[in-house]
Amino acid sequence: MLNQTKTTTLALTDSHIELICDLKQKGQLEYLLNLIYMDDISQEHARLAKDSGFITYKMESLIKFGANNPVDYTKRKINDDTIWTLCYTSGTTGDPKGVMITQKNFCSMMAAISMGSFNYVPRKETVLSYLPLAHVAERCIYFSTFYYGGKIACFYGDKKKLTAVCGIVKPTIFLSVPRLIITYQPAFRYAPQIKKCVT
Image (cartoon, rainbow, N blue to C red):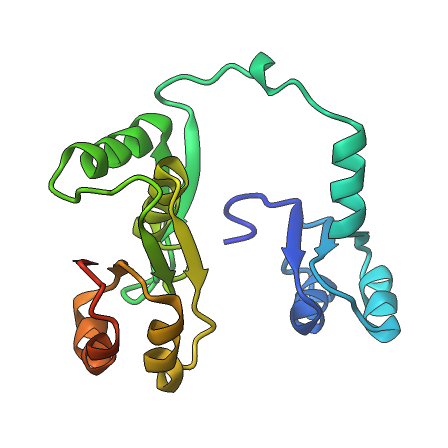
């Protein structure tokens, strides 16, 4: 994916540095030049990244730089066919494929949520998010929640604790795929406030 999209900059955590550096040293990352650290990294990993030829940045430093050097994004020309995001398939039937989602595609998805039977209640909804943001439906739920002023709680992945998390978060919206709805069904008894279960 990194080569297919000609990615030059990658944000990552310390746990992924060894893998990325190994691929770089093997010549398998043709375009990747910059790494952005999302968390603190060990001195060993910092040296490894430098020795692999990467230019490295800390996310905290980039945030401060951006705050002090604002950019006028209104000068960028965006139209209906401008690419909004690349959404990758899982690759279960072959190599993952990047699907180009345009601004028009995204707006139509948001309109479908807004004008359909979903019935978002402004400033009242709580979403329990556990699908990866690579999933385009999860992104739509995120942006819809931002638009309507709801709350989002990010689930950290231990399925055994979903029941407890539902009791704490009290979600009103749960986005899932059909197979996982069956898996998580017992937890919903502890979250009676869920009124929208989207599959």
